[in-house]
Length: 105
Length: 259
Image 1 (cartoon, rainbow over the protein chains, first blue to last red):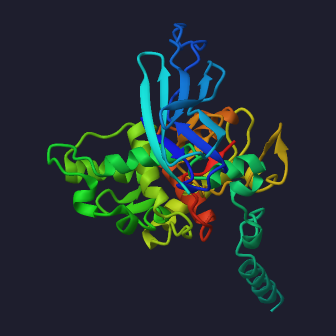
Image 2 (image 1 turned 180 degrees about the vertical axis):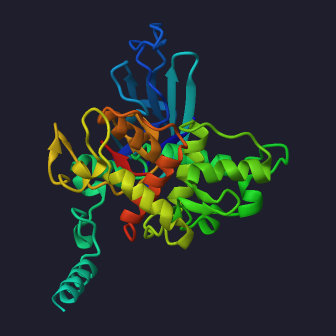
Image 3 (image 1 turned 180 degrees about the horizontal axis):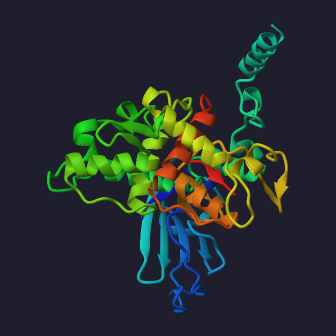
């Protein structure tokens, strides 16, 4: 699954930086029915988390009311150079990861 | 003499009015982008917030992926899309000499798959076809729309224009009734806009997905309670072609975002 991550490549120590993530997912609510009347099974991302050099800095639970291709943006303080690791977990064994590097001066 | 004078006057008048009645003057044409809320515009303008870019990324993978009996990728013949596909989408729908009719970008991709990759056709609105189409369309971003310049397309453009003007469906509305005559008004809460297809395939928030111009046209036709043409129907291609000539010179925006 495609993911788009926007982390500033460089920041000054102590800067507040914005992190933007966009994940490709249909986010099927589980409330819709087919023309034949059968329920379309729920298929959503249930959890998103972000780790900065190994420690978790952001976590979110997702629910059926969230639109397809969830866009999640949040802020953190640039403390050290290193890596942001992102993880999305969802129904039907859905799991996706992404990484982004940052240089802190 | 009087009659001849009147005829000459009429000819002059017609010559002075190159526009069809009710058509939007050239300098008053606007992209759908200009009708959108600022938040939706910001989403379109930021490549890391524009969900259409997810399809473009997948399209790039498909561009380089070998497929079909001949085991060739698009890139094996066309190379780097950023040069070989630059401006291509701005010229579509284009005339296919073998078929003797215009084909849109989706059909061109499937023709190339059949002729050069010996691969199966991708279904209309399938993720792969939308991804490849938007990846190719993206290479023309910012370039002026130049479809319909081929002389052989003239009768097809004209037929598309007739379809645009023709009332149909239980509501008995033509495309022009909204998009030429009332584009500055609203239909319920939504801006009507001017029917300039600058950003297709585009991400429509209502669809929660990327979609083609044909999908949009079928939605409109359904909206006037007429029977939509099937995907790939000649009428839809002619409409696409007319709409692209209507937007001639306007900048390509794919993948656009629309509400």
